[in-house]
Length: 575
Image (cartoon, rainbow, N blue to C red):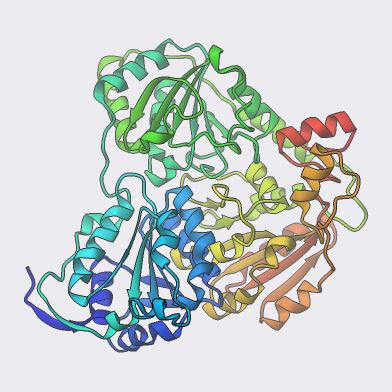
């Protein structure tokens, strides 16, 4: 145990963050955090990433934690405490650990109607694993150890810590200034699923005629890529991923089906999992987006389902499972593989190579040459060109809409890992640009952030943050002057001829980006795309590219229920 020291609350928090290996904190200042910042500047080397909006800080923290495999620290002052809910909600649903500090006015001053007083603890209790208050300086080490332990163990998720302003200044003699370093990363512990159930799952997989593995982002959270791929190769079982799970295995591997489901799944991959006789879910909650509103696997009565997840509540939630396995994906799959190698070493299934099917499907899209509406450029060609020039150490962020659907389907993640970041757990707008900021601090490679103008309107202020960071971030704005996803839903599914309240006025986004100091370019024809992308990615600072694209009701993207409607309405579509 360390020797006792007399420290104030701000110093204790900083020391505990340092002991847990924290290198960056995202946030912005307020009156309630001045006491913390004063000690920070004087005593800590932790880099503070100043954003212009608490929502931006929360999304950046979520992205940073996804990429680094470490819980990220977010902080916000009491006036802006409500602004962090979008990022915290996404992190909670995506199983991403964030340690979220919100400063506050003194305890019970809210009862006097002190300005900015709100019950922060109740506010965040429903979207965090725990939400608690630091009532005195002496308890800070204990509660911070608990925060990291809770956030990184089991199903990872955010933990909220409320800090009244007076606790930053309060002094205490501290004798337990230490960290439990296991909880500085996640998953902190790796429980293996019940051994008998693993053996039962093996028996089912060996007997299956046309099995498939469907992996959600739990495979990425668990860093299970290598063992999952080795298992798939041993059994010769194709692997499809949800959109958030994209990149769990290299997508150019012979067994990779690529993305499946309702947000970027192509016709060939969705048909394959639909026709499977056995589906092995790994680290997925089988939500509506990943399952095409639970229609993807046809009649559940005719399919055998296995499900491995760290969260018991996810297993069998939407599909009747023959074998449910509660455990860490990497550890449980490694044990499954160990049994297979020792007890079924002679198993030699026929080799499967999906690459010809994938190549045919992709080439059909790339060579389709569907005429674009006047003044627009094909988003297919944008994804195709980016796939060609993207460096292996690059990270791509995207969000719902045109900006995500095309790269989700068409980009090829060639090296396993978190190289493609989306927010398809909640799906709120305004994610990709702040996620790109977080990714830039989490990784040394270039970052490409796909955004639409509907989303971009939420986050323009943090163009300044990106420019100030001096990071290699390229924002690609796929512009159509409308909330295109809503137009798509209204026109294709609700038979609305002219959607109400979806269109907005044109903005000169190039001038805006130039005002923030970005290097800018506008793509107006297909032959410009590759050169513009290459130049932007090679630029070491902030770049901004604008390209006009058709809205989703004009050229229908890879959304199965929309494609079905487009076929009935004789509209152009990609599948």
